[in-house]
Length: 269
Image (cartoon, rainbow, N blue to C red):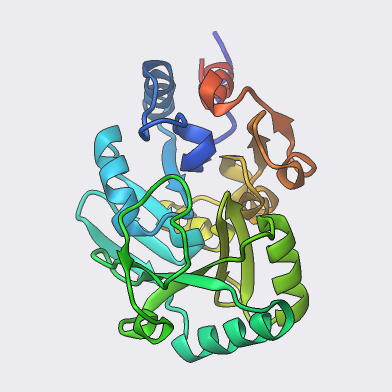
């Protein structure tokens, strides 16, 4: 008889990790592997940069009924009740100050925001392009309209500057004023200091009576680095960003090759 898995919590990023690249789908092999996790009495927790309104349809498609860490750790969403159990807002005046400091160094940048709440919108000022995957969004006429409701994060882009370059510059300019996250193509984000996927995941784990040593984490982008640091084991996808590959305990196949399933099948036989 195979030994039981040492992990009671499996934390998976979505884009570039659990999901295939096209149409937010999960293969039957991956679904079967997640059923193994549940059959072993372990918990699967989605941990994503997407805010709750943008992750709800994906979770519904997965038949997911548990807790999800959303918005880079700012939100804990209960998929069963459709409600937020925890939410950290970004101060809107602080967001404006941060944008001003970056523009003083780099020139004009273009911004979008994710509004707080389960029905919050993604707003984009003129010049901002929706990062992939394409998500529902609303175009506003001027930056001041981004702040009409409480927000969970600010998204940035600058034509001619890569996401890695923009994130590096923003960190150098802003210091500890806000948290700067590089979450994927077209997605450099600003959030309150101290927030991360690890922050949100720890809150979910506490609710389940578990800790970092009990956790197996999967990811593909630099925003997953804090989660890997907190978890007992971090598994990077073959398609992962070099920054995450450098700190991973293991590298699996790509998201297109069912990399998550390959590891779960081994650990949850």
